[in-house]
Length: 405
Image (cartoon, rainbow, N blue to C red; front, top):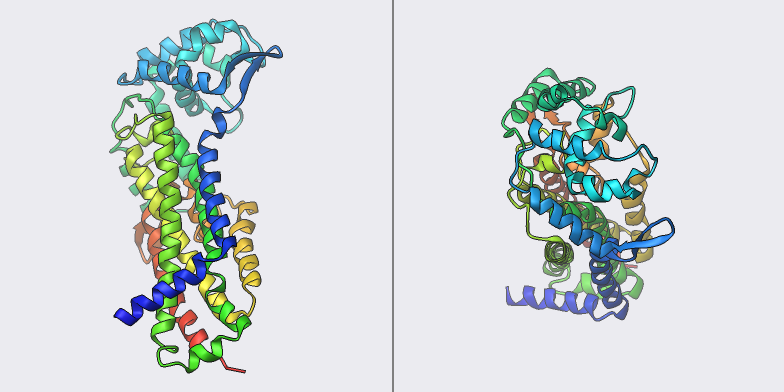
């Protein structure tokens, strides 16, 4: 085993001693940190004049949300919100009015949660509709949400059994919702897609030459003819690739989480996911969702690492490997598939970039295999793990059976 760890250490040195790799890793850390604070830069303008800085706006909105934390989103709170919004004059940019700032802004998070539930297929429920919301409609908020849940599930191509399971899960959700400030977690969710893609891309740059670099340098002849070349060294290379990919993903995820929580607040760990995604059928907390989302992104990166090393073992050009991985990550972003084509929808979200979307992890569309129904946040990391395990031996064999010229 001592020889194995020496080989792993040697592989790490080969990767990390390159200036280009250090620069890419440093840039990834900087971009992740800057992305957390990006929305706080600059100012908000009303009538061409600075009204407040974006940072001051965040602090003010946070104080408003914290003042409402712990209250149930029931008919009383909804009608308080309606009353506050009823003071706003009818304008396209109603949030620029003094009335909004003075009366309605403190209830803006309640408005964000409640309004979409009253949307219909024919039209969106806008601010003026909300101003006319009646006490009876407010009292029927959770009934309206349930009706929309049933309607949305009927529009999918899932089996009746899967739909029943989702309805049963939804019934486990505690209502009325208890409001809490959750911006630290919602910001984390928003950034994780970018963080995951960046981690996968940076990882590809680092490990693309792990096999192909030996071809281009001619070292493959020495490696494959050496005592440990066809067994232990290949294993060490694969171990290095997976552990480096793991480290990159974990570090960037940790930076994202720590900075968002420190910047926006620790509140919301045990709050319901429905405060961010009101139509979600899963009885999860924000903290549980953050963990499950991170696990899905992590395994998507490992699957990408396995594909990268397979391509590296088959290609003599590391640049070609990086280009292919970039296409695998980016092209699916431009493909949109609706719920009614469920097999294609599920297939698309099994690609690495698909697994990194918050909507994929918390999607109501279930994976059904021989009558077994699996939640997406369970199936996605399992699929990525199995795919990585299946791909790795091909990478091993491709390099081991490489013909020395």
